[in-house]
Length: 132
Image (tube, rainbow, N blue to C red; front, top):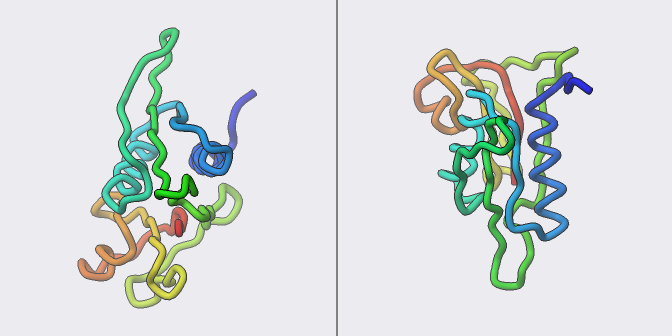
């Protein structure tokens, strides 16, 4: 069955694997997914990731991160833009996630970046998701 929103599917797989206590999760690869995963790594939400192949399919293997009490670092992930309703924002009106404690991931003309970096560069774009 075809997935209508691959980014939401990826975020759901990460959220479910993290809450179930898995060490890793495999996600079908795409350029946009890879850029979102890189941001999650740079912001400290996941341990690491690597590109791999399984039965001829390209995958991204995401290694999940937990604190000292084995609780997931990712408390929540929420998709903002959906296939039927895209949400765009200028750099002056970018929403804050948990009053600055979370991270906003946005697709700009300069590529996929965090909300803070987009505001510094003074570029807006499509709001992909928020993570905390």
